[in-house]
Image (cartoon, rainbow, N blue to C red):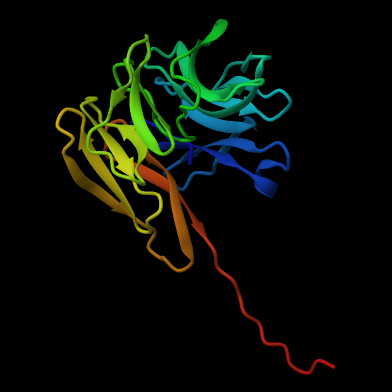
Length: 255
């Protein structure tokens, strides 16, 4: 799962392997009802625009290219940054005219950037070594802060420039997941756990409280839960999990 709409009714996701097209992958929109998924194009999905009309994606190639795919009628928009060799994650700014991404320029380490959708050069937001992860809503509702991390410790960075802000209440093994609707708190997950605990952390006091415990109905073979998505109204959520199940066969009569 790569994103969920603010009303929790539609999911943006990437299909790999046979389903997505080997070496190409596929970007899909799926309703949370029983309607069939809609393939938008090849590529890796990242995030839906605030109005839901565009999907922020990446074409798989050398070099990779940022692609804005319409979720309805319209033409795709390509944004090519020739110096970048990798895009790890992307998220929209609230204005719908800019986006942030974690990526690597040739010969440099990963860091987080902001860029306008109508062109212009990417501008660094964080020092080298700070990234945010695929599927996470890294930008605050106000558009003021970006949540990024290094060595597993998330921090906040002012997007317009300024000093890094430490997040109180963070514990070892925590991963940033999303912002609260009013921007006063963040959600943290513990990806090493199954079931997965999701905590709400107050950014002023550091107070930490359990929000949800996530797990599929059948836990047999489930070894990991990741890419937890929380809708902007905090009324819906989705996540991806990895099962590892094998069949044991008995063969008799071999010679």
